Amino acid sequence: MYETSTLKEKIKLFIIILFPILVTQISLNLMTFFDTVMSGRAGAADLAGVAIGSSLWIPVSTGINGIVLAITPIIAQLLGAKLKGEVPKIVQQGIYLAIAFSFLIIAAGASVINPVLSLMDLEPEVSNIAKYYLISIGAGIIPLFIFNTIRCFMDGLGQTRASMIIILISLPLNVFFNYIFIFGKLGIPAFGGIGAGIATTLTYWVVCIISLIVMLRVHPFREYNIFGSWYLPSLRLWANQLKIGVPIGAAIFFETSIFSAVTLLMSAYDTYTIAAHQAALNFAGLLYMIPLSVGMALTIVIGFEAGANRYKEARIYGYIGMSGGVFIAIFAGVILFVFKGPVAALYNTNPEVIELTKQFIFFAIFYQLADAFGAPIQGALRGYKDVNMTLIIALVSYWVIGLPTGWILANYTSLEPFGYWVGIIVGLSCGAVALLWRLIHIQKKYANI
Image (cartoon, rainbow, N blue to C red; front, side, top):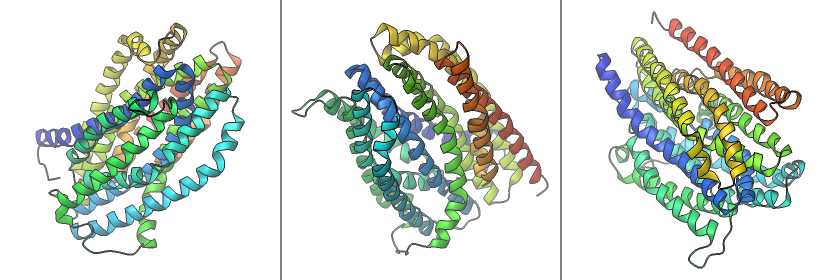
């Protein structure tokens, strides 16, 4: 990270930071994409089982990752304030906290997985695949959260290319592991959808080990000498991270969990409908990585400028990000509309599943428009460490407005399963408007500083 003085310099720096984040996020999402696509090739039940398992796992993982994300604006602001000596302590405490949350999730998951799945009206084969997919993923929780902590440290320094390279190395490995464990190669039994969970866990361990090596051996990270001095766990520093991270994590949880809740509600429909819903949601999620990456880049640059009390510069970066969000929304909508047929055929060969997937993708065009506008604004607000209002907005727009609207439309109109998607569109649109209002308020607050 460095100071900029002209708009051209800001756009250049923003793109330098954004592009590796975008590649990283798309690559991470491609792991889920390949899990879903390759599981679908094993059978509709495997696709549905992975869909249910993912719907339970993703809100938890993204929620905890949201807590870890607090490290990015903390380090960016320390860098802007020229307090580099505080960085090693922050990173170590972040790793401690990530490990603590990992054990908490493993313990909680072991106690609730059977009761939760038994509440759902699933076919026995689908339920079995979902259960053991989740158990397999559980073995990779600790390395996943350690990696995300290290990644946030790297990104907070503005060195976003490092995590991009790590993920690009691991992505082909994930596909290779999927091929082996899903379809049964090299003498290993075919696990179907469960194999996708095994492959993902192995990938998490590889990513974690590589990221530790890079942090300790590669410039400029080794200059921070993260483990040069060992610090005992500090409840005070944990509290500082949690003060920012819990609202971020909760807001992300409320957003991602509404999609998971809809998937669980879809269990009332047949396996083909569940599979088609998950396929459409999976591809739309891949496109969502673009505005999400813009938001993550805004957190870094705005955090850096806010740490140095250059709020005018931070505001300019906000405008750059929002302008990019509008362009992204249009671009992603066109992609979804033009390629909905070929995309649907990627996930399954069954004609009925393909046709249902195309219909779900049509609705995805509209909800991603609001998401592509709201995600950059969330990232900008995180750069200011303004996270509490974002939490409230997420709770109200998604769970008070979006999900109830979708349930009413699904159960009392002819839309049926598509009604849930209309509800998501309504919730995300309300959230985007509220987030824009909050960002304008924060910018005015710091206008005269």
